[in-house]
Structure formats: C-alpha cells, structure tokens
Amino acid sequence: MNYNADSTHLSALGRGLLDRRNFLGQTAGLMGSFSLLHLLGDDSLLASSSSKGKGPFRPTIDSSDPYAARNPMFPVKAKKLLIISCPGAVSHIDTFDYKPDLERFHGKKPPGLPAVTFSGPTGNVAMSPWKFRPRGQSGKMISDLLPNLAEMADDMCFLHSLTTQTSAHPQAENLLNTGSTFEGFPSLGAWTSYALGSENESLPAFVAIEDPRGKPRSGKNDWGSGFLPAAFQGTDFNASNPPANLKASGFRPGGEKRASSLLSRLNDQYLTRYPGDADLAARIASYELAGKMQMSIPEVTQIDKEPAYIHQQYGTDSGSETKRAYAKNCILARRLLEQGVRVVQLFNGSDASGGNGITNWDSHNDLEKTHGMQAEIMDQPTAALLQDMKQRGMLEDTLVVWCTEFGRMPFLQENGTGRDHNPGAFTAWFMGAGVNAGTSYGASDEFGFKVAENPLTLYDFNATILRLMGFDHEKLTYYHNGLERRLTVVHGHVIEDVLA
Image (tube, rainbow, N blue to C red; front, side, top):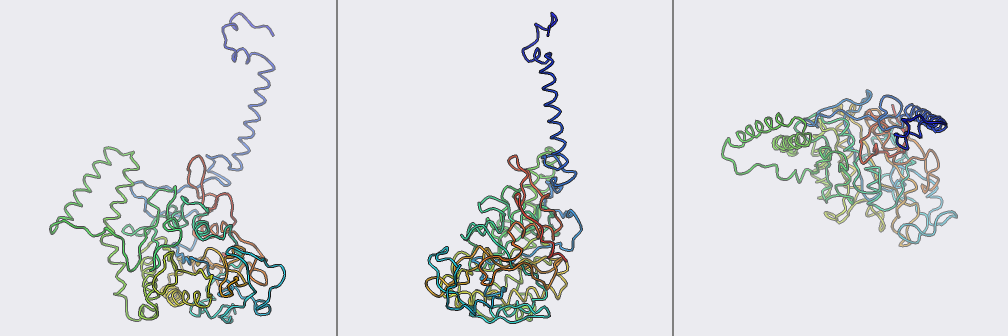
C-alpha cells in the first residue's frame, strides 16, 4: 500500500491503522469485544449491570442517617430476625433427628463407619440417652432432652440435611455466621441491618446478646460488619452487662442537655460546610445513636419490671445460675424485638467456662451430663421466649432461626462417653414469618452420619434466610476490593420448600 506524503509524519501506530489488513483485523477484534460485552451485560456479569438478571442491589443509605428503615427488594412477612445460636455443636441425633437404627446397632460397629474422626479413634454406635416421642399434630419425633421446645414442633420447619466444610469450631462458626471460614467478613446480622436499617432510631439495628458465660469461640466476628460500614455491626451486651460508657458524667444539673444541644448545632454547621463528607456524617450519626441509647438502653434492659408470671414462665427464678441469667437474656431479646430492633442474635453457649462448669454444647466426654446440663440452660427459657412471642403476635412479622455450627457423630469416641464433631450432617430449624411450619426438609442416613436426601450447604441456609427477609442473595451486594461481595460468595440456592 502506498502512503501519501503526509503519512510520513504519522506515528508507527497511526501508519499501522492505514494498513488495510491491520484495520480490518482490529475492527473484527473490536466487534468481537462489543459482542462479548453485550452478552455479558445480558447475563448481568458486568460490575455495572444492575437493571436485569443478577445485577447488584445496593440499598440507598443516607450517610447522615444510616439506621433509617429501608424497604426489602420484594414484599415479605418477615420484618425482624431472631437468631438463636448454639456454639459447641448440638447433637442432632440426640435432639431433633430421630434414628431408630442407633438403637438396633447400639454397642456395635457396623462396616462403613470411619476408624478415626476429628478427635481420634472411634468407638461403637450409641443410641441416644434420651427417648424420642412424637410431638404435636405433625407427630415429629423429638427427644426428651428438650421437652419444652418439643411442644412447639408444629411451629417449626426442620432442615435435616445441612453440611459444612470444616469440623473446627472457630472456622465453622465463621462459616455459619459470615459465609467464610476466614475472619473479616460481614455477619448475617450485619448484612440484614445494612439492607433494612432499623425501626427504632434510639436503639441499634443489630444487637448480639452474649451468653452469661461470655463470648462464643469466634467472638465478635460472629456479629461483626467485616468490610461493610461499621454502622452495621452488632452491638453486644446482655441482661447482666448493658453497654459500657453510656452513663454521662461530669455535668451539673441540666448541663448535659445544654451540651447536647450545642453539639448538635455545631455538627449541623459542620455538615453544611462539608456536605459531601459521608464519613463525618456517619460518625456523627453513630455518636447521636450513642446519645439516644443513654435513655433507651436502661429502659429496655429493665427486666425486673416484667410481671411475676413472665419471670416464672421464662425460669428466671429456677434452675442453675447460668440458666437464670440466660432466661433474663431471653426476656431482653423479646423486649428488643418489641422495640423495633431489626436483628437480635441470642447466644446459648460461650468459649469461656463458667457457672455450672459447662462451656457450651461441645460434648467429647460424658454426653449425657454435658448435653443435659446445657439443655437445662436452653430449653425452658427459649421455649418460653417463642411461646411468648407467638402469644403476642410477634411471630407474624419475625423470622426465628435456630442454628449450630455442625452436628455430632452417631458413635462414641474411644473414651466411650462423648460424641465427636460431625460436619457431614446436622440440623437447624426456622419458625415464624414466611415459614412452612410443621414440616421437615432433607434427611441424613440411617445413622445420622452423612446426608442422604437433599443435601444443603450453609450458603443455601443463608440464601433462604435472606429470601425470607425480602432479598435475593445473588443481588444483595457490597462493592469491595474490586468485587461485588455477597453473603453467599458465589454459591447458594433458596430452599423453596421451606417458604410458606
């Protein structure tokens, strides 16, 4: 090809564009790229694709009022979420997952079961120390370990085919609560408060009620905000230990109110001067919430003002010291939900030992004693909480989730008294708004060792919770480090059969 005289002044790239073969080749490449972008956009696989398919949904959040109530993606019954977390791994085969074959093979070691598990060599198959009985109109078989909760079988929707990726407590707790075995990821409660805000401007959107004995194994990671804004992390306290540093000091009579008024005027002036400073607005909002909590928290934590019949129903005056303290936590949970707190996470079990000497549901030794003592703490107060909520009509707009990090083995450990960790099959249940009550989904095998029907991951579990709260888990995202992050990572399917 001949160039004209002016072409000698073009760059090498410019002269290349005048070459017919180069021009046609680059045009074909560009057309292919445009076609690929169009296809990716149709499938909502581009970061900016938000109008169709699986594009991201980000709630509109006013930085000056990050706790304001927000609407879900689609109409649902559930407006609030109660998570009852049982650290230590509750044995499904001693509570909600009835296995007659454990009685038939009791004391034997049938083929196909492993010789070694998480904590070492295995022993023989062992039937449950507690008798299973049919409960309610559904006839659901539940053991005598939890007689009070068993009475609510017709209100529960059981998931018997859950699995997890790890048999170590901290990592399993992380995965259950955040969708990752690593630390630093937002919890389910944080995602929910990020999406929906709060119905009470004077209380946190998300409260984590610690067990009377202390924090769980993964600590604040269970209710942390991870890479979400810090405004959406859980505020942790319980009936015995309200939030610290709420009591004002050093003011003369009337001085606190005048100081608060002055501070509010100064904040307004500063926001007027710097209207685009979202970090400043968020910090001011958090301080204002702390100020409001000085009035609201003492009121909501006044458990002693509850009527005597409530204390008797929950068991604040009977049983072990830990049980009585946990019962007060259950009353606190109800009071917080009544006041419009969006998410309450109630812990039954901790990492540190205390009270009766039982830490949580971990039972490597003397299953009958350890599970029995932990059940004494949980059963009556938790059942009373749920029955109380049902009587008050609160289950009409509250989703209840009962969960633990994994299950326990159908055979005893080598010591002959405890059950080891079992990530291959375990049980959780839902109750309340939007749930198909009185049903069971999935099944473990004849021993409760592995899942046999409809296997579920914790991604499926969390995807279903978000769906019940009004969100598509594939669309509720937060842009972080170049990725559209979500609770279920790139996994998860909604368990349609549990939806009412």
